[in-house]
Image (cartoon, rainbow, N blue to C red; front, side):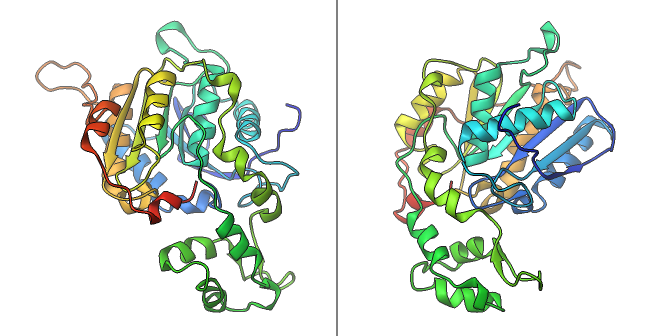
Length: 326
């Protein structure tokens, strides 16, 4: 695949291929490590629901210009989608389950729309998607930008930093929120004595090409992914509380379910228990893991909320959370 890079990552679960392959894609200025125990908990709960081990694997990947993946001269959702396509091809994965947060979620949504639904009733295609899960993201362009974050990171002479607390002190002037600074500083590498301290992500390219993360390809404005999709939004984030964003979900993912959890943009941290419960309930229903004891037939996923009900809530969004990370 021309221009694609090999994505670094780790695989949770069996070493050999299994029936259900789940792909995790992180957000802007994060990495596969940013998921914490989220992936392991999802895997454990799915195995408990199924009553069978060795039937699931989770591939937690670093997007280009992040983590251990290659630094490139460009960054966009389309490029991440191409990288993902190469990863799936090389690992011989068909009909993947895609799950991402923010930037990673938008890349997963883009991939799903490009390659379509792999309906298990009709057999398996090489590139189609079984289902997609988006954590606090919508398939449309955003007006958000994080110039203030990149400026703050560029403003630190990391070559003179030996302790994380020193970098934290320098960030305070422009980043007053301690939690936000902690997230930023997760990108600072201090341990490599040969290089000294350095930022792990490719800041120059990411700051220049950030707009491509917030955009949405024009060629996909009229398309739709007809397979199952789950959108999990934070009540204090703009991503799935903005009417225009919800309209894009209903237009481009007509079979989607939207659920809300209390908290901001980082739903997999701030509301991890609820987010995992929704994800596992959704996958259990789609993969027919649970059975209703009264009917002995697979349970269906209960729709907690839809775009229409969310808009009716009239949720208030704080100014701080309007500038949450992608």
